[in-house]
Image (cartoon, rainbow, N blue to C red; front, side, top):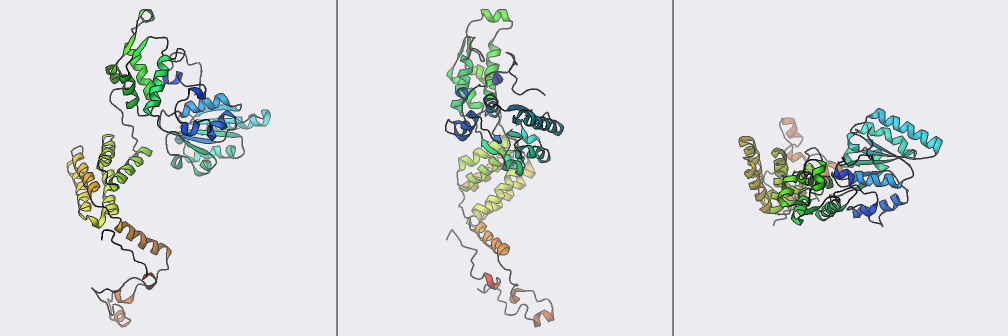
Length: 419
């Protein structure tokens, strides 16, 4: 298996790999978990590690942080890729870890990259070794560990959430790569416009790897072919145009099977609920332009029409169902405007939670209260015998009599919050 932290990659290694820092002094970003006073930083520097899951988007520093841990620990550090290895490899590594602890009194830190690629049954193989202290497990994942890591393993590990790097962080990384003579482009004479750096930092959306790749492409396309020609070459100038060509059109990072899918629909619903038209349109466009299923979107908007607007504007539900029909009738992308029309309407509509609140109270009674028999006066008297027993007796079709079971008469479900 290829060592994820192979130091002998040479100058042909991608810039993103060459620029990984060897110490915290060169680690940029993630201060919320790696500032000097934070527990994770203290544990790493003191070599008092515990099992953990590093959860974060691509290019946020999960592998880089793992490399720092490898440099700091006295335990045996074993990198392991869930993409290329199987359960037999796991068992082999665990057997070796047992022998290492038994004969050399040395613990093993097992770093599992892309741990979400193991199913939950495969992850169970780690559990006994984690429980008895044979290994310290460090898993890295871009997916929500609540869904992708099995509960027993998750309960024995600390989860650290790495965030997207800020544009300022990315700019620092790019400038460092240009100046660094050993790992970056410091041996070349490079003049890069601030606008070019800012453009790359903006479009990479917090992904350091994307930013490094764009910079590397920009530099390589400006270099002449041949080593002799390069030695005679003067200053490399990278302006905004070159930067735009290097990173090209922004890639909308959106996985319909992952967290971004659910985060975006949640953001859309909450923006509609808050009557924020601009934010609602932003999240709608974000999903549609990334290829989201429009029917998935409109299903949530139908829900919002009842849950958040309800009888404050009954036309909202009618428009939502009409939008669903338009999507079926004319398809995409022609239905984009219809979806946008619905989103704007729902955002601007008056809001009322009365329907949702009323049903929630009724549901709570049904689930948690004793269910008395249905009153006789509202039961169907379909036979003479049933009438003799009082079924349907004294029924008042338009009266003010409470028809609920007797034990629930004190509870009022419906409270019109728009009166």
